[in-house]
Image 1 (tube, rainbow, N blue to C red):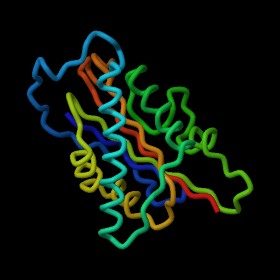
Image 2 (cartoon, rainbow, N blue to C red; image 1 turned 90 degrees about the vertical axis):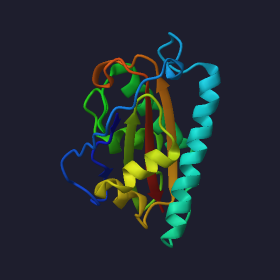
Image 3 (cartoon, rainbow, N blue to C red; image 1 turned 180 degrees about the vertical axis):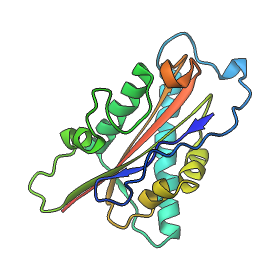
Image 4 (spheres, rainbow, N blue to C red; image 1 turned 120 degrees about the horizontal axis):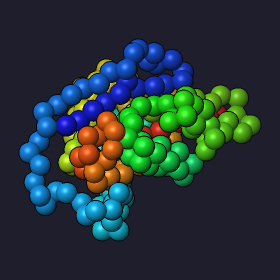
Length: 190
């Protein structure tokens, strides 16, 4: 089962209503389930770190193939993405706004402020899948979704934060499944 919300871009690339792409639920194998902990074990944390790097590499290859500059990883955007992925997994919701209703760009701004920049903009792509998610699958899902694709192909972005989290028995919209949730936060300030 994979899900995508609509893609958000403060600069106005997409203001469409929420878009969700539902895919067939893959057969759950007993070996795919995590241990009883709510979040990933240290072994899977390492694989999630690898997944973050694979998403960045895949995204930059895709951008290069379209004549766009590679995005640089940004610690502030990584922290924003991580906080959001963890919150969604812990509270069982999936969407760009925070659980308290804060719109996505205000949440990101707490981590990635404009500082003295005369121009600042952020965007976000989300995806989740159960029981597993690869960088290739995340990219295919985003590419198949026009608003997510627009973020991937936006010339304005210069930095990115990526956070994949693994949640065993994820509550709420995840239906108690083992879910992988990826948040990518795009940014530019100049």
